[in-house]
Amino acid sequence: MAPESLLAAVDLGSNSFRLEIGRIGSHQRIERVEYLKEMVRLGGGLNAQNALTREAMERGWACLARFGERLTGFAPAQVCAVATQTLREARNRAEFIERGSELLGFPITIIPGEEEARLIYRGVASVLAPSQQRRLVIDIGGRSTEITLGQHSQALQCASFPLGSVSWSGLFFADGVLDKARFAAAISAAQSTLAAASTDYPSTAWDCAYASSGTAHALGDILTALGMDGHVITPHKLYHLKTLLLQAGHIDQLRLPALKEERRPVLAGGISVMLAVVEQLNITELEVTHGALRQGLLHDLLEHEPPADKEAAEILALQQDFGIDTAQAERVHHVATTLWASLCPAEAGDTAHDALRIAALLHEVGMCVALNDYHHHGAYILRHCAHATWSDALRQRISQLVLGHQGKLRKLDAAIAVPELALPLMALRLATQLCHARRTPELSGLTLSYDSKNTACQLQITHAWASAYPQSARLLEQEVLAWSKTPWSLQLQRLP
Image (tube, rainbow, N blue to C red; front, side, top):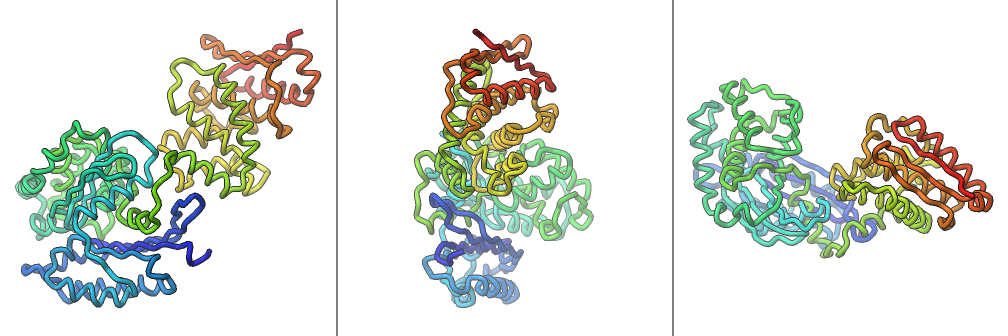
């Protein structure tokens, strides 16, 4: 890996210090190489005079020295290090920054809250699927909460508020006691601090809302461990967590699955702020996302604007990274979409269309691992590839299509009973069979139709076509046999 292809972002948060190293991949994508995180609790080291204690500074400096060793050999243009709310507040910040920059080996910049919000939004946008929707991004950190409204990769309105999981836990739950009065006071104070947000971010201004950073991830993990959907945070789920804290009565008595020990002291403050945010902004659902400030820093370092068609660029990059025969991919894509037009039910949604298109273009991605069972390898790659920003539902469907386009169909189990999977899969399997010779097949003697009442498909070929392409005809007969072992029927009819 060439050193000049690496970029590094250092985020000095109020709770944790983070170092992320990314590689500049094909089409200017940034691929994670390494991620280091240390719970420094710098924000907890601010005293009554808003000065960092010596102990807190030593913790921070020790962490930066370790990060500095990892960044040895990086050029100044490859590294960006920023500090946020705690150091915006600290009276002795100059002392910390001077020594910290020396230990890190690179200058540390204290950024304004609005700039932090912009970078967070850019980081979140980098991991989301392309969309025309107006996005609201909420980031609850240790001592500040950033709220950003944007569209595509562009932040349109940014705000930062001086409240967070660390500061609110210290103000309202310092002795660890968890009771209704303290929660009520914490939520009320947070709502007062966020008062301007109600006017600046009305519900009519955005289409969907996302939560990023540590507080959101911690709450999502706990909800998942409790058997709930941790990918989406709702007011109801937050009140359920609050009830569990009240039942514990004290932080030391709190026993929640997936709650990390270092997160325990700041959990009550984080929940209070999150409740205040969703109530103040009338948010019914917050989708937890993995984008964050550090990804925004990396994209700023790259100084690259995302391509107009982000998804097309991602597909092309994957094709190049995994050595896909793009000519064959385009052939299969053309034939599959042509056949799909004959099968497509009126109620088919966008996911079915998009999944078939992407799966056809990437169906041979697993060949880079091994030709044997390449469809299994390809399904795994596309299910877990971190560089494609497909939604979870679309990613799962693409993976299913790639897994099912070769071999027996029983590996898809009950999923194949769904028309939105079965019909695109049939189109893709037929396309790969027809393109077996890796040249454009003749389709003029072939007709495909679908009977929705009987979940049956009929494939008609002429005798002349079958005589001209005997191997293709044999492969189609084998495909009929494969579908006979499913809830679906594929009939092959030879016409004069």
